[in-house]
Image (cartoon, rainbow, N blue to C red; front, side):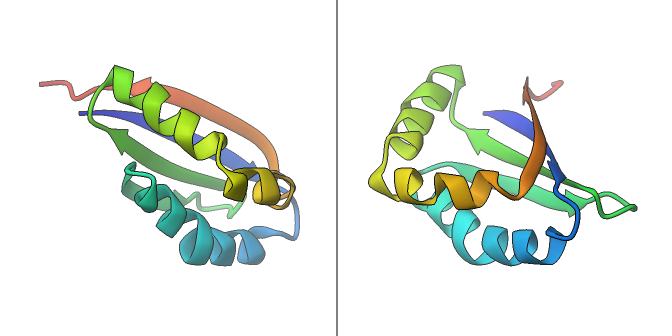
Length: 97
């Protein structure tokens, strides 16, 4: 298994709508495309949303992301989703043992 540590800086005033969007729409869609979600957190200041998306392997990342980001759903919703985000940082992570 591999993961992506995803840290999103949420635009000011959009935390509540982001959390609703993530939990009600984005998370189910992510799971529906075969990606896993290990955990999801907010930092103490409520400015950053941190989550871990999981995959079977490094090769699986490209396969699943190509399907997800190439979908009609993503094309129709990308502006709404990205409109909540001031910055995104994505790091591929692997288990230490």
